[in-house]
Image 1 (cartoon, one colour):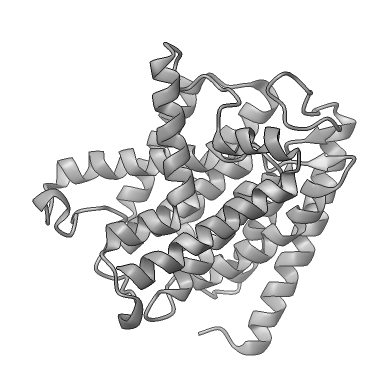
Image 2: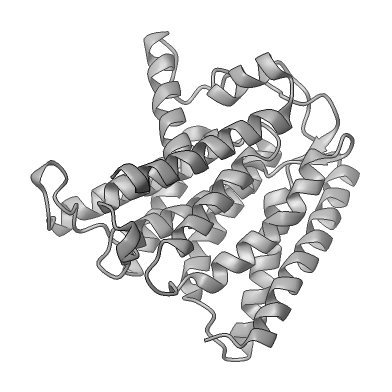
Length: 315
């Protein structure tokens, strides 16, 4: 259990290190001319770098390494390996543009590492009549779900503040509805307080900083870890909020799930590759109507929050 003084220090360190790291990486990216160019798919008109995710990860990595060297186990540090892989793949894509097939291969590798670390969906809790699953099928299902979640988070990173808001809401919901402190509480707090500075850098008018694929893939990987843990017997929802776990996951990840399914089907119907980027995401359509990143992010955030509450009340 983290002592109060240590917790306060961790939260302050997360915010401070992240702020410095985001600013520093932005300066390096700008100096190296690794700037996000404005094109027909862009939702911004000001200069920006896709370095925010790297700054958030640096904060998490440094704080985790410091405590690891002290022999303090804040959480299972082994999950940093697949998360680092996703970050590196996303960072390479941010700078050089990576073929989506290679991205999928690395996402599958990261998913397999998580499975080998003991994170496996081996029970569907009665969905479609299935309970315990064959290990081979369970591994394929887990890989599919991890890759789907990672890409769904990547898909919603299209306007200022949206991805980091939905991720933060998910993490807070994950911890709030848990019957006991989860083994991920420390990484949850570090991540949220490392994300907070991104709001300033993401929403400012000039020299903007985007989360980038490095951030959306790494944070999407973290979200997938939480989802798998929810579906195990170790995660118990508070009795007063008890729901079927699959419905619970859908309720707290509704927008990314809805958006990726909707966009995939639209692209297939139009005869396009489901992986071909466009501006048909719901947040892009709302942005055309409101012309305000803040308003669209707030609408989707509060709709997601309302859906979580209504799901708990109705079901």
